Image: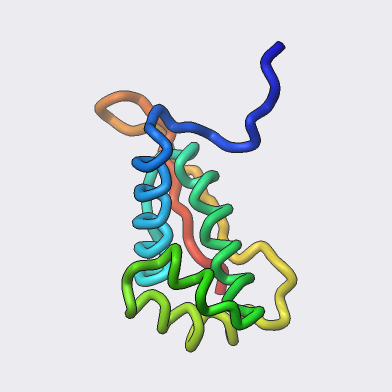
Length: 114
């Protein structure tokens, strides 16, 4: 019997998937908006919202383990954590942006809520 694994594998190995999600999370934190496929957007939302929650709790070690870019770590603690301090969750929003021309994949825009 097939059980729900709790996350999407995205057709990648575990190390490739982890690196891709960490890089996408860094891009979302630095630019506050990224265009990607819908399935990747749904997965990276989990990572980004977890990082912001850790930053709100002042857990610097856990955030640095995921984000390798010093500018992204600084922005999470100096800009994003104070911005979302009174918000209990839901720091990202996903907008569907149609279908991609080449392979007809669903495209989405994921951005941080103001």
